[in-house]
Image 1 (cartoon, one colour):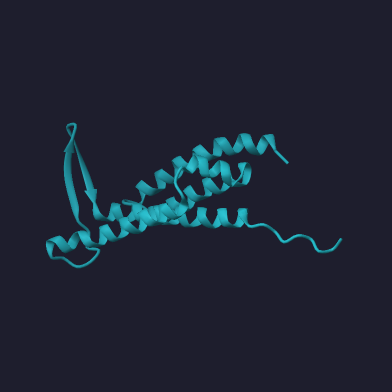
Image 2: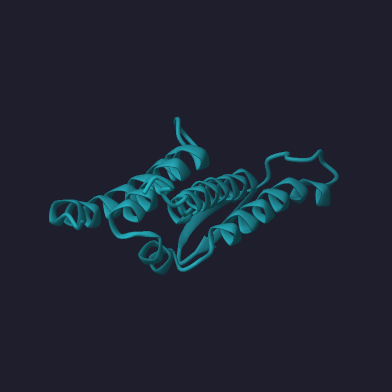
Length: 144
C-alpha cells in the first residue's frame, strides 16, 4: 500500500531532519547537543525513509553500508583518543589546532573528531538494526 501523503511528507521531512541533525551536531560544542543526539535525529530521518520507501531505496540514498559507518565511526573515536599520545598526554585529552583557510581562522579539535565518530556509530547502528528488522521475513502462517 503506497501512501501519497507519506511519500510526499517523507521527502520534505528527510531534508529537515538531516539539516536539524547537522545543526544539533555542531551546536553540541557550546550548548547541549553533539554527536549522539545529532546521530539519533539523523538515523530517524533514514528510518522514516525506510518506512516510507523500503530498505532498498534507503540503501540507495545512504550509499554506504551501515556497518561501514560504524567502522569509520570507531576509527574516528580511536584517532581522537590517540592524538594526545603524540604530545605525551593521557588518552582522550582534548587537543585544538588553529588553521587559517581563505583568510578565516578555523578551529579543529580532537573532541570534534570524537563527536564525528559518535555520530557515525549511532547512525550506522540504528540504520543497521532498522534494515535487519525490515528485511526479516515473518514465518509462514501454518494455519490453513
